[in-house]
Amino acid sequence: MQPIAVIYNDYTEKFGVPRQSGLVPSVMSEIIFEPTYRNPDALRGLEDFSHLWLLWEFSKSARNHWSPTVRPPRLGGNQRMGVFATRSPFRPNAIGLSCVKLEKIVLHGKNAPVIYVSGADLMNGTPILDIKPYLPYADCKPDATGGFTDSTARKQLQVECPESVLSKIPSEKQQALLEILAQDPRPSYQNDPDKIYGMKYADRDVKFQVCNDILIVIDIT
Image (tube, rainbow, N blue to C red; front, top):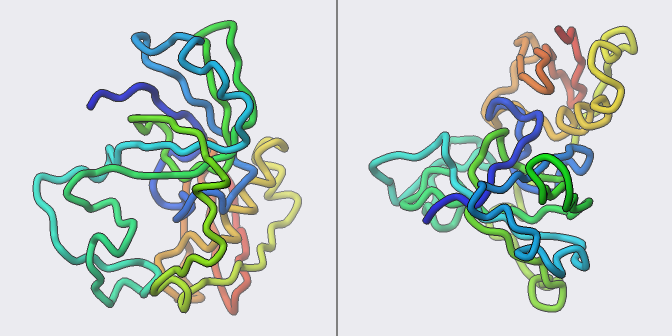
């Protein structure tokens, strides 16, 4: 398989990227096609769909070997589950699947056509292998069960960030940052209230601490 496109956004490192798509709807991404596939006819009719499936490559996690079991973060990183019972990036074939919201399609201009989506859980520069429309009548399963994830749902954190600190990031990116932090980017097995964590977002270094389900942003540089 050859990548058909690349996604670009403000997720410049793995730490802080939402663990599933749709959890942080304020983050915008643009999908730019490789020259071979830069044909507007290939997108004809796509504008009528509200959501898309992205098939992509775990390009930063590719390995030459695989393990039949992995340690899901949702289980604290201490319990092993079968790799096919998880969405771990460490798979025999490093393929990811994400559902994103289609915001707009730009058919003219530099690199056109360009697709703009929200709610992606992909790092900046991730290769896209395929794009398919989300079909509510077939893809939505209201009675579906979530296996071990049903009993390990993590509640969102309360985020406290002084205005003087928050203003260090562009205003149009502030809401997205707050949503990312509310998802608790820490590994599940880390819960030290004195530890200062750091993550990168939108070319900024964000420092924070977490105590009693409250995340306090210390600084943004």
